[in-house]
Length: 321
Ligand SMILES: NC(=O)c1ccc[n+]([C@@H]2O[C@H](COP(=O)([O-])OP(=O)(O)OC[C@H]3O[C@@H](n4cnc5c(N)ncnc54)[C@H](OP(=O)(O)O)[C@@H]3O)[C@@H](O)[C@H]2O)c1
Image (cartoon, rainbow, N blue to C red):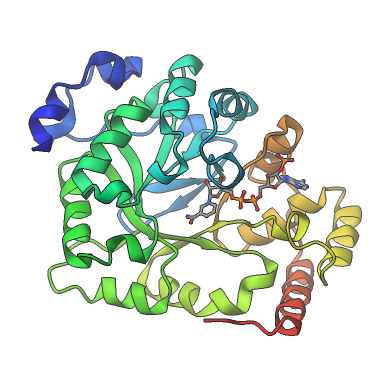
């Protein structure tokens, strides 16, 4: 059973100074509020459960899977990131926990996302407990089902477990990731569902607009926010495409970098961003897009990038639903 073991969490695992003064929330006392002032260099996106998600998030997946990311996360926190995107599958939650502890940043000044992976066939409660232990925190701000297939053994049971963690105030908000139209509709149609996911975290960049359009539209209709990962793909694994010239042109006109052009393009659509970088200059550049003084793209520039991305996508024979 999970409940007694949660009560026995060592103080070192609960970590953040302010949380140590707060009774652990297992009996239903509210999760401590987020100190939104600490997120002034992020964009706060309202969610359907009354909470917010700070954008951008700093991710420790992709190139960082299985690595000791303690120094990396400390550098991201030093650059000003306050939202950390994790998953058991990334195999580095304990290193993120080390960084959070070493940073001395109070827990309520951080927003922590992790995911359910059904890793080693662990059920939701067991895997969630392991994430809490490794990250060294008493609650998670946002918990996502990482892929539809990790819940395929029991979609209703997995979502019910998410709702249970949510109702016990162990998780501030619950959502999904990599859901397409079919899997999102199936989740929304669960007969005993009482909570709507707040977010669907999906791959999104200028070259996948058409293939992701339908699920983003469905999410919008249902009040579910979209969060985008791999947004910088035109600069990393898909260089040489139709948006390159547009990125350079807009970047020069606005006096911003090509990476910032893409991030602002995603931001302009009301989509949250999950990105990453091992380069502190890139980290600060990324965050600057979400600060108050950033010169946002004009509507014409947003449209220009949209069109260039769609052209390339069609040329490659996509979309592939
Ligand atoms: N839910 C899911 O299934 C899922 C899947 C994939 C990823 N994610 C999450 O999203 C996070 C980001 O994913 P991603 O790595 O695919 O995203 P990304 O944001 O598209 O790419 C990040 C890469 O872009 C490079 N970069 C940053 N700024 C740049 C610039 N100005 N010019 C050129 N390159 C630049 C970085 O390299 P440098 O270090 O050199 O800056 C970094 O390796 C992951 O860590 C993970 O947390 C989630």
